[in-house]
Length: 286
Image 1 (cartoon, rainbow, N blue to C red):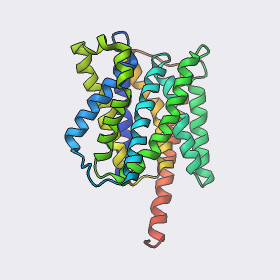
Image 2: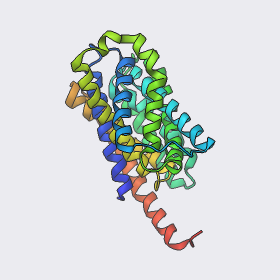
Image 3: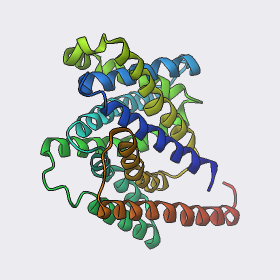
């Protein structure tokens, strides 16, 4: 696998570990306040690392990064609201609708569509035994999935327009500002807890700084459709993180479903990358 693929997979592991740590704190702080704290922590770290250059930016640059900021705020807020009401692995499988839609829209070969179909079967089976899902949690997961699809596309555009981590740092700061009034209204008292603040900084590192930085770099050379299929690994990572951190166990059927999703992701990565490399050696430079 290429460096870009490894970066995406490492980001997936990091974000799901951060989500499991966050869920363990929901009895002490409201999810909206915690996701805002995560965005603030990541924005501070990214701004310190990137020190983005803001002068000389075009109107298009600002439009893209503003849309990216809004996407980050909505996607993360909806995701935290969903797994506050659903098991983490189930919330991620529903959220996966977004990346799968991007993968399906970008596919031009029947083989690609078959990998998406296998991943879809796995996603469906993973939640098959959950008969009493909170409908509000499901709605939030669908909203998060929609935001995830927008994130894939806007992250790629941001990476092309803003060098290094400049766009990501500006978008993270913008997303934190957008969510600030809602977070402070939701649980100001919880945000004053020193332990919550420390763990929130850790969550920001695991769930935002590491994965978003890795993905932003990867999307400069990885097609959005391939990235979308790679996101099929998310349910497996979420289930493992929930098992290790929260003690959330899955049935044999659900683990089998995870195997389908992982197989689809591995197959899509292998064959799509092989075809891409072959095409690159044949086609002349533009």
